[in-house]
Each structure stands twice: as structure tokens, then as C-alpha cells.
Length: 565
Image 1 (cartoon, rainbow, N blue to C red):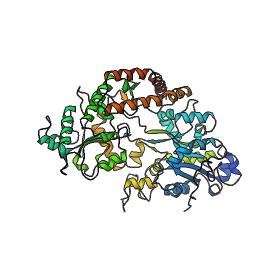
Image 2 (cartoon, one colour):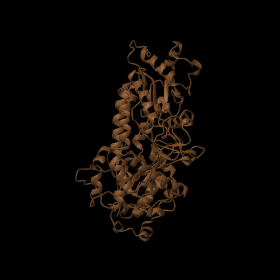
Image 3 (spheres, rainbow, N blue to C red):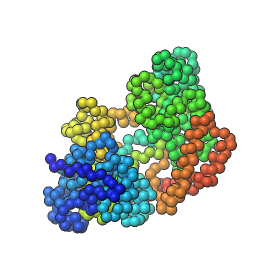
Image 4 (cartoon, rainbow, N blue to C red):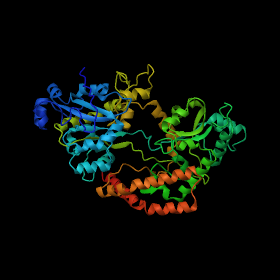
């Protein structure tokens, strides 16, 4: 097997990237992108997506240098089987320069500023809309949309999915980055409420909760806010785990402001579809939940549960890792928010998933997250890269669903069986040794640019059992409680003027909301005077009105673009 050469050089402040600077290969072909020469001498072809992209001569004389951050658990990309398999099937030689995510964050600006010694592309680029516009205007980024004829897989996706195309298209009408698309229908609803059924049974037996019986303690249980409060109070006051101490139980737990398993669903008790940005689309209008008086009412209600010890104060301080670690071993969680109990506790069979809590005014709805299933800015290519058509055709192979599955989960032979099942779909190998499925994936899958949507799940690869379980539960106990007129804010494209407005005000707005909200939740609620000051400041010094207009204008263009296709 041809093996990619690992690169050990580390980025330093001078940014002396190894083997960078426009292709890094030998031969005059590196000096130009003459398609006729590429075709006649190097066998370049892009139409047959299952055949090699280059011939043997091309494999020897054309190469690319790609810079990428990676997870600490992952192998060097040069050593990953999926990357070696891609070389075998494409004859496109890539040298990967891997650094840690923190190093990339520190050196990102240096890479873009070093005009004489850049890689050819950045994988896991994490480019914001503002960064893309800035560097596109400086002629730093390749306008990928000018080369779509060499990318049959992506071209087909953009033709069939104008919504994805509109999210990628910048103000000047061009596309400068490659997307990651993983659509499972999970990210919009990042929370499920789990309840310890044995503890709940004890509360019922003690007469601490009215209106429910043992027969009700099954998946789909619906509790009113009053019933949940009674339940949590009983958990707080009794030695539920039987260890002789009545003060180590955690009645309700979550990870404050985490991307999943957060506090936002509690605001659904008051009819608010809150999220971490407090921004949601209602009747095609960009709406900020913090402008609603029900937000104040909900905050005071939740703060009361905190002050009573019904919500563990650790929820506001702990990391995701702490939350998951504390759920193992001795039972301490009475109720918690997460995607599945199986990840959180050692005894998931003792927990049931609940429907959203019915609030004191009869409201029952949940969070609608803005976490996108379509991520833009995942890969960028620098302008002036020789033979860039070859590089783009190579990246285009990542969007083949069979390749996407391996990029996302791990390769055939390690994660998947060599033989497909009777439906022609990838089959996960049985786990052996001491590695979990997640550990195997993190080690062997580069993640990044993929296209996994309905076709892939139905024809190419089965969803992981954990993901399928999440989806089934969300479809049963979460999604039915979101009104049809409520949607998450999609990925939006902004004009330079709009980006300047967001850059000037949005960070201050978010900090202002975050600072006040944590103070209110941890200290008994918000007073009339503080709420008046807060609402005045939203429309005054934080300039929420201007921010809201930017999002609305961008959203209106997004809708118009979808309707026009």
C-alpha cells in the first residue's frame, strides 16, 4: 500500500510550515493549471467519481499540503487508513500538517497573513462569515464556485439543495468554503428530560406527589410544574440513594449554557422556545426571547427552584465532563437534561424520559436550538494554488456518501465490515478489545467535510444505535411540542455592513444578557427595577434593535432565495 508521509513539524510563531508554498511537488505542472496538460499528461479526470483522478505520473508529480487541527485522540491524518485509502483510489497525494485545536486558534491569523509560505488549504478551518468576506475581498481565498464543474458531487448537492447553496453564497455571489452536512434531525432539540423512576415511585408511595400513580412511571410521563416541584422537594429532603446521607442527592441537574443538556427547556414551561442565543424565528420574524415579559416570569420561577435547592447550583458551574462523571457510580441524579440517560448514568434502565413540563399557566413547549446541521467555513483553499482543479476534485470525493460515512465514523476494515449488508449498506464491525465505539471513531475518523442526509441513512450507512435512539425519543417526546410557526435561526449570509454592525454590538449584547441572567438565576430572581433597566438597555446601549434588523434582513434574503429556486 502506498503510505502518506507523516509530517512532524510544528507551527511556530514564524509559521515555518513544512513543505508548504503551492503544491510542494516536483515538475513544471506545479507552475500552472493547464487543464489540457493535466488531462493529457497526468490523466486528470473528474467525471467518473469512482475512478482515479490522476494517473501514476500524476500521483508522483502532483501533491498538496493541507493544514488541519485535529482532536487530541485522533491519529495523525497521514497515518489514518481512510486517508491512505483515498490516495489509493484517487492517486492524489496529500501531506497533512496536523496541530492541536488550541494551536490553530493561536496561529490562525498568522497563517492568513503569511503570503509567502501558506499551505494549499485548511481543513477544519472554522471560518466565520465575516472572516470569509474579509479574506475574499483581499483575494486570499479561492472562489470555489468558479470551479464547480470539477466537483460533480458537490454540484449535484447544490443543485438539489438550494438552501445549502444560499448558506454558502457570499455577498458577491460566490462560494469560498466547503460545507459539512450531517442531517439527522437531532441538533434542533438538544435536550430530553430524564427522571429516576425509583425515586419517583418512592415519592408517590410517600404521598408527596398527587395526580400520578405507579402506572404513569413510563416513557412519556407528563408532569405539571407543581408535580415536578413536589417530586424534586422529596428528592432533596430524603436519602434517596440509601447511603445514610440526605444531602448528596441532586434533585435536578444540567450543564448551564452547554450545547446540549442545558437549562433552556425550563423556559418552555412559560411558552418560550428559548435557546443559548435567545434568538428564534417565530412566524418568519427574528424574535429575541429576552424581550418577552414571560422571560422574566420564567427566570423568577426557575430562580426559586434554585434557591430552594431543587436545581443543583453545581449545574451553573460544572463542565460537561464533570456532569457526565458525577452521574456514574452512586445514584445522585433525580432528574436531568441530556440526550440520553445511557451516557449520563450507570443505571439508565432506572430512568424514564419525560414529556416537557407543563408550566403554571398551562404552557408546554421546549427549546429550539440554533445549532446548524449545515456547517459552512469547514474547508478553505488559498488563491494561487497550482492545479487547484485536482485538489477540488479530490475534496469532492468526500461528498460521496460512502466516503462521507468513513470520514465521519471511521474506515472500512476498522469501523465497518469489508462486506456490505444485503441492502448494500455499511455494517459496523463488532467491537473487540477495550475501545468504545466513540473512542474508535475519534481515533480513526477525521470528521470535516461530508454529506450525510436522508439518502445516506436510507441507502448507504445505518445511523449509530445511539443516534437512532436519540431520534426516536426526540420524535416522540420533544418535536411534537414545538409549534409549527417556530424555527431555529438558519445559517445566514450577511453583507459587509451588516457584519460590521454585528461586530460592533453583538458581543456586548450577549455578554450583557449572560451576566444578568446568571446573576438572577443564582440570586433569587429579577426585581421590577432591574427588569426595567434591562429592557431599556436592550433597546438602548446594547442596540438590540439594530442587531435584530440585521438578522431579519439576512433571513428575508434567505427565504427569498429559497423561494426563487
